[in-house]
Length: 126
Length: 108
Image (cartoon, rainbow over all chains, first blue to last red):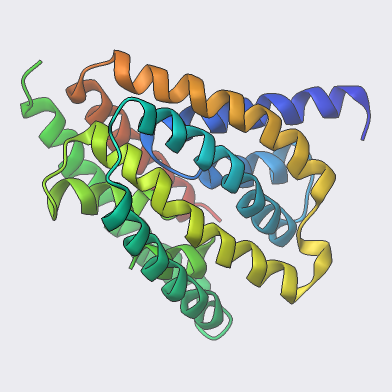
């Protein structure tokens, strides 16, 4: 990796980190395509690497929110642990089913949820 | 549920967690963001372990280090932004993000 690529990598991290801290996502949705398209990393490597990056990024964002009194540690830890178990199940299943179809179903779900979120946002005051 | 989708598709889980927290549990957007970030941590530990066990080459540490330096700084900036803007703006921004992610999933 040369200096230019290194700088680009830092910027990708910074942008996905900002979206992560502001919107509550891991940042993988930004990092994975950026690694594949900008840095030429293989898809599975980009996914594996992004999951590692999410750890310190989410921790940093979570700590920052915690200082502002916005985190309910107990229920959230339980939810996360439950999610961790099902993540393993999901990763196992991913190998056995049609990925293309799955992506389409999930995309439609996100469009519906995104549409409703925007609608809710518009109706909110302030 | 969030973990299941995360493992299945390699997405973070936040896109499922945040709407779940606001609608099912009635949290405001800012609180949902904060709690989603915490819940993501155990989910990605399992995720990264799964990828690493599937093949050590799937996790590139030198790349992860650089991304994480940017990510850690960015996440703090993001958290500050989340507390400066209104809950309405935060909700709208999240809605737009979901539509963008959906569009990307539909592309090959």
